[in-house]
Image (cartoon, rainbow, N blue to C red; front, side, top):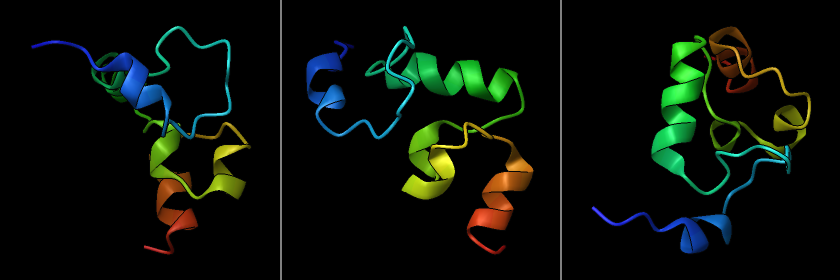
Length: 64
C-alpha cells in the first residue's frame, strides 16, 4: 500500500510539528497505541494542544 503522507498532512491536526510521524497515520497510531495513548487527531483542538494523549484524557475530553 502506498503512503499518502502529502494528502494526510493537509488534514493532520497534530500541533507537534517536529514529530517524524506527522502525515504517516499508520506509524503515528502504532506509536501512540504502544504508549497507551491516542493520536492528537482523536482529540478536540483545545485538548490536543495540551499534548496529553492518554485514554483518560480522551474519555474526559469527549465526556465518556
